[in-house]
Every structure is written in structure tokens, then in C-alpha cells.
Length: 113
Image (tube, rainbow, N blue to C red; front, side):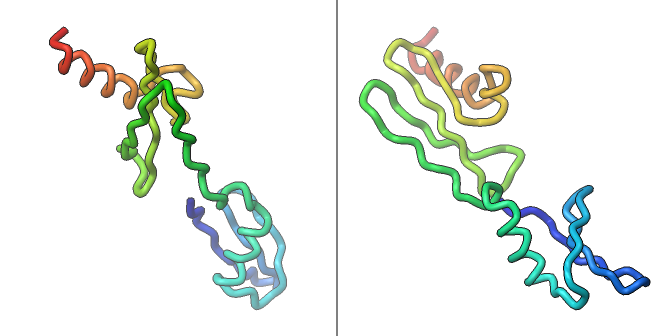
């Protein structure tokens, strides 16, 4: 994931990395490339690759592309008992999401229900 980071140099000869609402002081003369490296060290969990799901017997996994974010994929698991789970934030919060609804609707169409 990439977070937009900026370097701001103030008139009173100070410099900051700006990430959303957070202003972090840095040495004057810090370049944008250096700011990205500093930011990556400050927030390693943001840049860490998302672990791939383990494929276990007992369910099938379907990889679905996010509709709102580029290059982001979510994994929908269809369990043997007919339940459907997803690893997207919406499912983790509400226990349902558009990905699970889409998979359930596709399963119903295949079964002719």
C-alpha cells in the first residue's frame, strides 16, 4: 500500500514530513525520496505485504479484485457447510460484504435456486 507523503519546508527554516494530519519534523533539505524511506521505517506495518491465505482442505478460496482500490485483492472462502467468509475490512466489521454476496448469488445461479 502506498501512502502519499510530502515534504514541507517552512519560511522559518524547518522541514516536516506530512502524512494526512501528522507533521513529523525532519532535517532541513530532506528530499521526497528520503521522506518516503523515513515514513516506511516509521510505519512498517502499513507497507508490509498482506499474507496470502493458507489453502486448507474443507473450503475453496476465490480471489476477487477490489472495486474501490487498484491492485487490491480479497479472498472469499466457501466452506463445505455452505458458509462464505471474506478477508476484506467490510466483512471483518459487518460479517457480510459485496464479495460474499456476489459469490453466494453465483452459487445460487449455478444450483438453479
